[in-house]
Length: 308
View 1 (cartoon, rainbow, N blue to C red):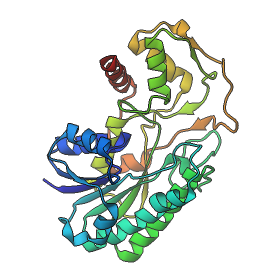
View 2: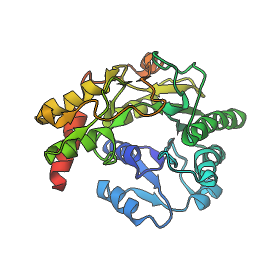
View 3: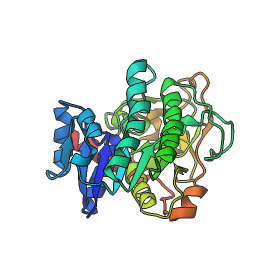
View 4: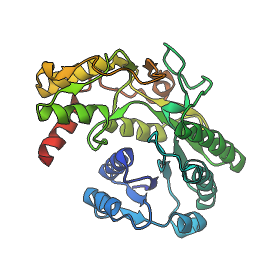
């Protein structure tokens, strides 16, 4: 059993990561925001033995008050929504906190720090699969801050001789995903018999079940990775948005006439191809990503049925 720290532990990916670590019988310490009773309840619903930490500043200043963590997974982030413009909070959480965790990891004598970047750091490179050696062209404040974090945290870790890697997830979907996201919004509307308005759906994306994502990242953190490197976490199975929606319709048994393709336009500056190449990841762990999205779709469908 390892002692493992997870920041952003109650979020969509974080909660699934915590659940998988608990399943593997590790002792999990979960960092959440101070006074966030909802996150505390969500985590204790996974397992009552999860150690909740709700004071990040105390933790960061008192590294030796905690057991030496075998692994730290840093997922805490803000600003994913396009309308989020609190630059001070973006800098504090997305940039400064990562560097503080490097100092913490050094003093705590932690094993490895797994920094969560974002596929949006790459920006639009046209009709090619994105690879880790490409230059980054981030556009949103969120993407810019995540790219700055990747660079700064890596630089700090090298200087401090702290073992770390950065992962960049692509197209994560599954149970617990926000209701306005593509898969849950389509499933919820179709369950009510409502018409679904979509773009023509020609965009190419790599949709990864959150459960596969966390398993692959855990596997990577246990492997003979190269320190300070970046790893794309994607299935290398790019599909069109239209095909993904049609798979949802087929798996859930919905009436295809409910989906109105082409009824809304593409967003301004929409990237028509935004998917990753995972050869670097597979050279280390050889993770067997599914070639379809059935399990993740059913997880969302069944959770929404339970809510009803």
